[in-house]
Amino acid sequence: MDNPSFDLVVIGAGPGGYTAAIRASQLGMKVACVEKEDALGGTCLRVGCIPSKALLDSSHLFYETQHAFAGHGIKLGSVALDLPTMLSRKDKVVAGLTSGVAGLFRKNKVEDVRGMARILSPAKVEVKSSQGIRELNTKKILIASGSEPIPLPGLPFDGKFILSSTEALSLPEVPKRLLVIGGGAIGLEMGSVWSRLGSEVLVVEFLDRLVPAMDVELTTALRKSLEKQGMRFQFKAKAESAKIIGNKVIVQVASETEKTAVECDKVLVAVGRRPFLSGLGAKEAGVEIDPKGRIVVDAHFCTRVPGIYAIGDVIAGPMLAHKASEEGVVAVERMAGVAGHVNYLGIPNVVYTHPEVAAVGLTEEEAKAQGHEVRIGKFPFLATGRARALGDTEGFVKMVGDAKTDRVLGVHIIGPRASDLIAEAVLSIELAASTEDIARASHAHPTLAEALKEAALAVDKRTLNI
Image 1 (cartoon, rainbow, N blue to C red):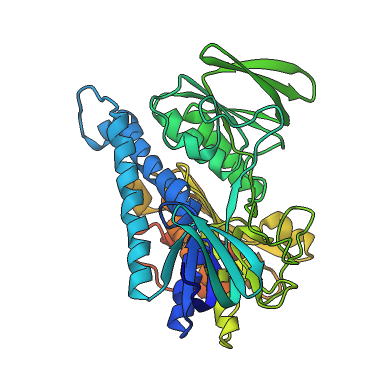
Image 2 (cartoon, rainbow, N blue to C red):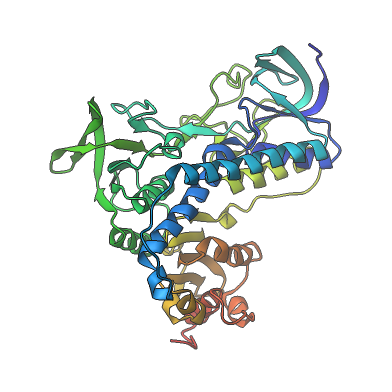
């Protein structure tokens, strides 16, 4: 096969890789992007962010027909679940977006190379596929190979009874009892999907609360809300082993005081993800790997090997699709001599349960630990006209401001459409805005966004609607 030459070879076509490849092409580079899977888009588009959100939205509608429609004056007869159609819809959403990435590659003249990549040198990448072996000559290499689910000792993934998030997206029937190991975003989102569809869901979390990286007040409210919806939680506990007996799984769960045997139909192990570097040849090429299995890079995303760069889940930082995309853009801009930066304080974090939880910046606890004198402003959605009209009033906006400078340090939202509302807060962090800036900005009425304005006013103890 031919051995073409490129300015940049990107390994991985996930949100970080494909975005980087497109931006590099826009900057005049000749680019190839290598992807080992049949479809483009990486974990996020294929078996992560997008399919999970499709199921979350479908399952939420199913739940609402039974618990909320009557309050809106909508009377229904019996409601039945058509799981195959729900899963098919999810697959169609995914297919449309992955084919869209292929179209973007064609539009931007990025060469789409399928196969397993291996770095032979800083100037050469080998690609193995069913078509044979191909070598790509290149001036630079960008590693964006993403991550994979972490298995637990004693609970190895089998794809049938002990599941990763990938298998949890495509169960052929609703499990009667689902045990979720891990109270982070993935566990709570997939637990919510199957709980709404009829599963009895128990979440076992090693720490003493859900989503530990988020504001304590926010995650406490989230736990109470999910408990009202029927989900159960066991904290400060861990799953030690599992035994499959017939069509059931018996999991040994240990807490500080006792060990119990939990019987369930399926187990979802969602304790986190780890960088995917298997077979890539990065270490052999001289790339430094830290004790957590992550590639070490500098502020320009350069590894210690000149010409080899890395972004996204394979380097330090939160494993978020939008974080990887921002890094991909900045990395190739730096290669091209264009100024760019990633403000990590401004990277939002979202859990797509209902209510949604979204946050950006410092939590109240983090701000105090860093020595800030803080002022807190809170405003409940119950006091907004739009939330009442929606019939979705649970939750609040919490704003953390610096008492001396009035700068917005963090914004934390639990409530309807928090994932969209957080964008205003992200911009306020990016522009180093004050709480007064948000308080003075006109917000359309009636909207959910008014809660941010009122929370900003609350920092100065001058709310207008409570």
